[in-house]
Length: 187
Image 1: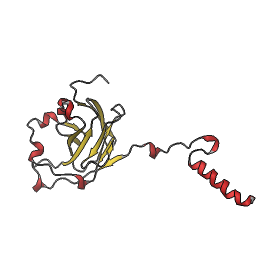
Image 2: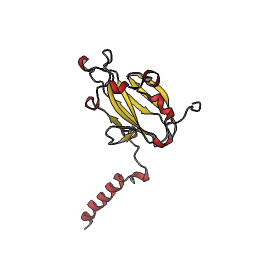
Image 3: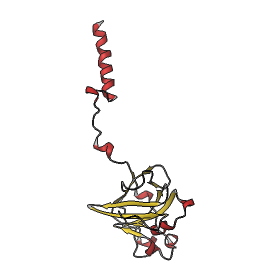
Image 4: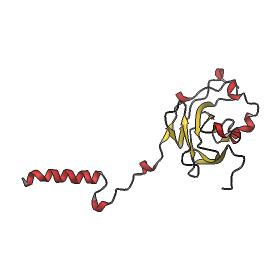
């Protein structure tokens, strides 16, 4: 009978360790991979070829934000977004050919803010863009523009300033995106 109870004691001890109630009640430290935020990983198949409608806004150069290899088209116009359209804001993005980048919301951004790809499957605070081949010359709207487009949604819980960062290689570029507000407080 004594030998029959040992497997039961061993199973109970193993279950306690797995549940985090092991040695003196201390939990095992979380792994670095668990601390890393999950990212939306886009592929070149998710991209689209920019057309004339992409560049329909006359002031697109003035209203767009270029952060390294990534361009957020008409993103400066988000400061005039009315409160009733806040929530999920579509931002068209262009990526320089061959360059990969990581777009992330900084920790200072509201906790409920996130990015989503189209179609929306998940919301994350980090989006990874691949390095795709340039748009073929015969399919380009403008001969000198080989950038690929990616649809992106910014889930903005309300008006405010959203600190973002674009990392390409060893370079990180930070920007404060104004959504529904004209000015932001000093950082």
